[in-house]
Image 1 (cartoon, one colour):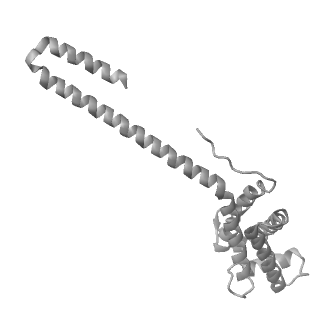
Image 2: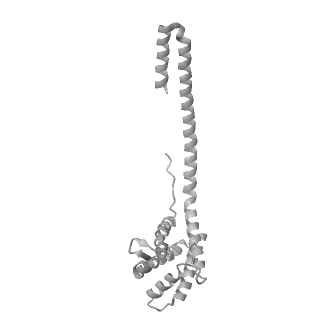
Length: 202
């Protein structure tokens, strides 16, 4: 701040020596400019202080609550999709899911029974995540289910892609989006033994 004000002061002194009667006008102009600079400095400083406070408050809130919100949202998705599979024809993925499980079991499990088992499985995962109990077992069930979820991409590529492997069908998109669920579950798994997000204060 001083590197702006001192040159102004010296210019005002030179003006006083050289121009006499013009001093008042020139001095007033310099003073007005200095006041504007000081005012701008104060406004910028206040804005920066307010911005930093808001940023730190939001960062701290997200660090404290984001994992819990992630766990709850993931649990709601699993429970919701699991409940749909109890009602034939409601879930768009149940036919492909039932056929896949029946194929993997070499026909020992019928597609109808496979859909029922998957519905119970997903509801258990959802409830475990929502309540936050038995998270290790819940995440194990989730990861085991995710392994089976991606198998239709290889077993039934004609149902999962219009152009293999770059243009997925609706069923293919339904499967590929599970990559996000897997990544979210890994973040939750990192907190099972006390891990947490710590906001960086700078």
